[in-house]
Image (cartoon, rainbow, N blue to C red):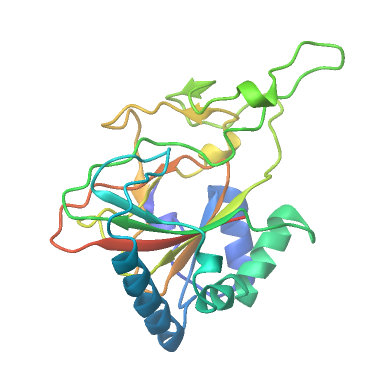
Length: 241
């Protein structure tokens, strides 16, 4: 896909909605005002210092050079300010309807030397469609590897509607060097989960942007954190709806 046509940071709501539907993601320019961004950075630095000995890992990314700071709504009022950002609320309503809830608010810190995450989707737990009376996959038996594919092209069969959106808030700059998130544009319409092999078996683009940018993506989109080959941590705030 021509990278010149892919989403770029903007605050035009019609463009954001269109790109979210077409590509599976969009980029919000200046999603976090500078003053709020500074307060988020400070609170995360304080909390990371408190949890420096915490060896728990996110099951989707258990590499030792990744840090996850979870349950952030319990760890500072500033995070409530983030999740109540109006433009994000508009996009979530566009995707999910008027009634939705927050599933998690976590910080993801990719330390220098961390490796790329496997590609995955956040809506992996939704069983495939089934005809009435047919056997079905039990929701509790779903795994990230089920139905994996190397082909992100649009499905010709019915697929599940979006039940999840995710917003990655860039707390530091996201660059190719420091592990900006890899995305497979259009893969949200494939009806499949990605092959988790690293190095990736398909082409990806990386969501690069300045600190304060956010990208909203469909829970069906194939994505994964990149390898941090820089000398500084890459910090993102993940809000899953």
